[in-house]
Length: 378
Image 1 (cartoon, rainbow, N blue to C red):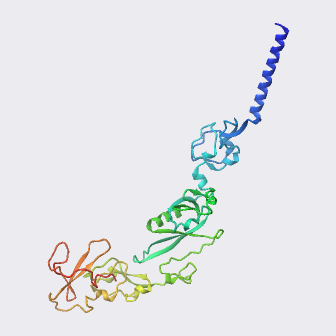
Image 2 (spheres, rainbow, N blue to C red; image 1 turned 135 degrees about the horizontal axis):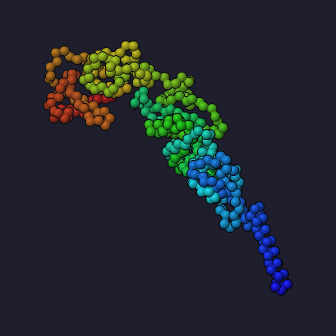
């Protein structure tokens, strides 16, 4: 072999060794402007897994800059306590899009809380001023169980954290870009403990929930009393001097009682219950002394007070002795909600059987029908 050829071969081998050494140094240190660090899964990470130990879950690998994911993660601490939203295979890069949306939703909530969503409109959603991160009180408007003819407003939860409004979460920038309001709020997601989640679901099923916005930093609970009468308010969110709604205990019907019902034992059909003063004017107020026995001549709606007038026949006179069926027949029509109407027949203030003995209960031909003073709910 010629000396010149030998020299060229040695030079080529030396260049190759130098290139291999430089390549190994670049791969080991991540040096070079054309390579960037990317976190990849050290082990398989299942969906829903919270990364509590980033060193055990991921490791850094170097990728060419033009092949590395644009939403790559380079800092392990950015993964701590994050929840993965999909399965990550071993060796697969972890990106910002892989974080669970549920995990980010709960970021401002303490451990042990759940997310529950209620439907709102522009009014109950505070015209969009209830923002993610705000604190609100929840008030439910529903039928008063002590008086089905009455509504009641109860503030059943205070200082509740708003996690999201519509699809906007606490860490979104969309609110700031829209001038500090959420346009057209339709749903609000709240943070609540499991038992309170059940209370919220119950309230939205039984009534209508309204939000009231708290001042930032206001943590006190006011224990607002239920409201059933605007006249009892003291302007401080309660129902008057902290004493609650003023009521009177009277005898009310346990169930709806129709004209002609014979009351043989008053306690069987009536029970003492609190009602508002305007409803107790003519009622039997002595809780120890039940109403009298005898025949009812007027409808007594369930949970409504019973009065002496209910025991008086049409015209307000006592039931005549030695009654004879003569004179004009009066028909009392009773309509109870969506139920079919019921007809009751009276002559001279005393109830009589259906004159035509019709099986369908309709009023006989030629007999006056329609509501009368006995059909009114008292």
